[in-house]
Image (cartoon, rainbow, N blue to C red; front, side):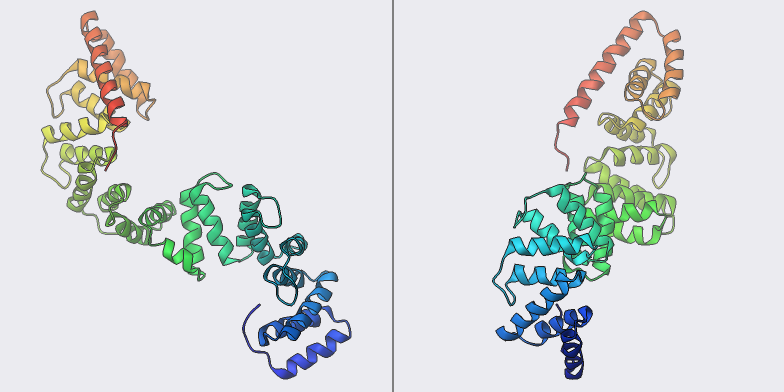
Length: 360
């Protein structure tokens, strides 16, 4: 029910048509009466015409009649009657009725509470263009309420709802975590420029994953000119705060001299920190370094321990790790292999301890 004023001539036309049984005119007249007046007699008449049209199957009238019952407009409030009319309107696909019914089901007002059903109704109403429903569905996706949690999908719904005028959704876009997920969603769609802007907002609010991601934007030149130095800066920011991925990427920078002066010792230091947090890519690279003597003195026992972890974790380089392990098993003595297994156990204990530590 809007608050727009109705031209008097149009109201007279609708009244005549309504008295002749025109269902649409009855609905329009009821709308005009509720929009133009708060006089009880007018609201009671509005209810009468909504009811007349609703009883004849008009879906919008059924929805508005539900509102009348819910809000006590022209009739004594009755949430049970409101739900009944919302259900009739929903059966005809009315998105606004789906939204109101979802709210009732959420709160258990006049109907049994059911989170899954409420979520399904919010989703369906959002497809029909109800902006409030779009926000509510996004919120449920974010929280995993009545549906499997999917913050990435929630972020897209928040953006859409905000663009369609939802104040709540616009406020949600100030959430640094949501900003990161928006950036991730846009990045996956190869929309690098807007993804970069959202990532900056999130990174500057200290979201660790966004800081790593911002480094990757600069490293690959996505959404911004390629800049290895700035990339290394953001990897270091994240690494020093405990991000295993940031530590791994910073180690790679030092190993390859990308954005920083090449330094094998620093590379090994950061790769080790990442590997000890069970960053499997770092474990493989560290194992290769010890195998080849890259940036560190060759040590087949350390190589065996780290490459074994890659195999245990079934990392993307597990097959390559097994090939190197086969060589080591032919090279190392039984005593050396036992020593390697002891190293493996020590590394595994450090990883277990690190997994229980809170991260910045």
